[in-house]
Amino acid sequence: MEKVVLVTGANSGIGLALCERLLTEDSQLLLCLACRNMKRAEDARSALLTSHINAHIDLLHLDVGSVQSVLAAAQELKARYNRIDFLYLNAGIMPNPQVDVKALFKGLFSRNVINMFATAEGLLTQQDRLNSDGLQEVFATNLFGHFLLIRELEPLLCPGGQTSRIVWTSSSNARRSAFSIEDIQHRNGMEPYSSSKYASDMLSLALNRHKNSQGLFSSVICPGLVMTNLTYGILPSFFWTLIMPIMWLIRIFTNTFTLTPYNGAEALHWLFVQNSESLDPRAKYHSLTSGLGKNYTQPQQMDIDEQMSEILYSKLLELEKVVRKKQSEGNVDK
Ligand SMILES: NC(=O)C1=CN([C@@H]2O[C@H](COP(=O)(O)OP(=O)(O)OC[C@H]3O[C@@H](n4cnc5c(N)ncnc54)[C@H](OP(=O)(O)O)[C@@H]3O)[C@@H](O)[C@H]2O)C=CC1
Ligand SMILES: CC(C)=CCC[C@@H](C)[C@H]1CC[C@H]2C3=C(CC[C@]12C)[C@@]1(C)CCC(=O)C[C@@H]1CC3
Image (cartoon, rainbow, N blue to C red; front, side):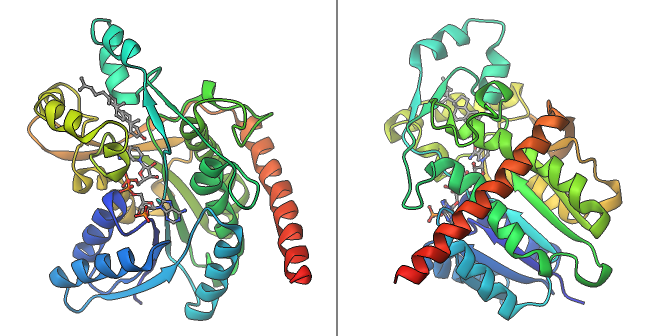
């Protein structure tokens, strides 16, 4: 039986590279590209079809940052498919990033330099805003929209005793100190990206606790530092051109500079070929590239508090009730 695979944010970067790699791995795949921009989705589909002429590639309009769009997309998916084997939750944003140049130069001459380049700890802040649902945009896009999608798709995930898999594209920038359980949307802070990624790590753990018995398994990956639209948005383009040779040089000393979307998608691809029984719910699977350019995947234990992940799960269920109520009231008003 062909596998049904859905990838969010599939039209560029790591998501698109993953699609390419999955089609190379399994030509019988039924691949659904879930994107917010249908023109970009069409372009991605055409690009994939040039190297995989007979591939079965569907498109789906999905803006994960909009409650209404997630609900509509889930309805469409339930009409199209009777199960989903792999749900890759990859779409993500980092709006208005700011690099702390002083911290960068200080870090360059400290013993923390490798960790700084691997995680961007202490280097990056972002400016977030409210979206039209009244939610913080980074939280809504990177976490909550995906949570709502999982909730809506429950009937398609592991129906009839089969197993299904969820894979989150998290980050090495996910940090416990950036997250507050009192402020899960990160309304008061300058690290919404780091907070949302830490929250996705915790949510994955909670999902495993609640859903493994029903055959649903969740994992998180870190793609390393990859040059994509997201990273190009962090610094002016002339700066990237200037430091690119340095980036390739750093890659010799740290395996986390995967740099290309193909390399960054390593752990996403690796998980596709693993059995669900072999997965560790507390591990983050890292895409790594050696100095000689060899790709491999390595699990690392996540710094997660079980109790806090459980509270986050309850808070997300509460918020789901609130947004659903708002949505149905909105529909009645119309
Ligand atoms: N690049 C890196 O170094 C790292 C990236 N990551 C994560 O990898 C994931 C992929 O990012 P990357 O490939 O780097 O960057 P890209 O910007 O190339 O890809 C992000 C994808 O997400 C889509 N997207 C953004 N917002 C929405 C939305 N509201 N609804 C639907 N799709 C949306 C984008 O669509 P559109 O084209 O329309 O904007 C795009 O397809 C992200 O989750 C990111 O946080 C994690 C660690 C490191
Ligand atoms: C001198 C020189 C090479 C400067 C570049 C420094 C920074 C721009 C990068 C150092 C660590 C990078 C990093 C990311 C973005 C670019 C850096 C801050 C990410 C935050 C991108 C998105 C992620 O999810 C994790 C990355 C961690 C490392």
